[in-house]
Image 1 (cartoon, rainbow, N blue to C red):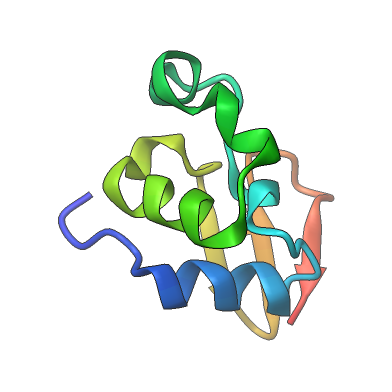
Image 2 (image 1 turned 180 degrees about the vertical axis):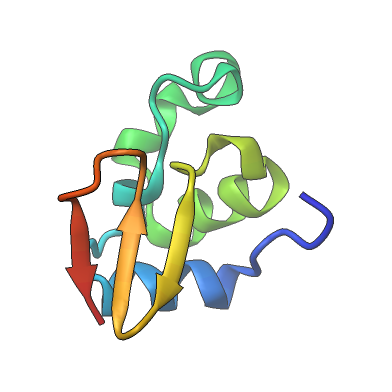
Length: 82
């Protein structure tokens, strides 16, 4: 990612998408998560958001916003109202 999401952007997306806490944005299948992030399940929001900012490949992708919706992953029926 050329411009990773900031801590504020990650927490705002999680809140607005109803995923709060930010752990809902973690891609548990990613290499970054498997290597460094497993302990994040019990961490606070700031620690998780910081990890995701520094390791953008650990965010569930694709992450698409628009039309007052947040879509995570490839399942076409999985989206959240913003």
